[in-house]
Image (cartoon, rainbow, N blue to C red; front, side, top):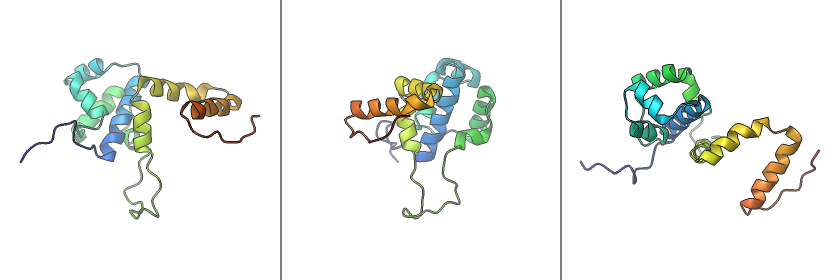
Length: 145
């Protein structure tokens, strides 16, 4: 059996989500990948692969990560559709894991995500409109309070 290089393998959405949550928690704690890797007895490259969803996190390693990052195990699965949720596409909720992954895998996106809740509510729409214009999206007609 030939192994597929990491650059060609498409990560599983659950692995992407768990990796994203590891990254979010690590960054929220101000911890570097090197520091987390040292605490777990890994290389920083392995932590990168976990965060990118390229390598699946084993149950025992997730337990160690949760302990190191002072998070509960369920934290890493928050936001995922329930396994009991309908699997028919017309009944399932839209999966936001890929969108969130794309956002937090850039330093700017992570910083924006951290700052956005601290922006006054009346200014959030203005920030959103500016982002739409910069992204080349059509502005949405809204009343700014």
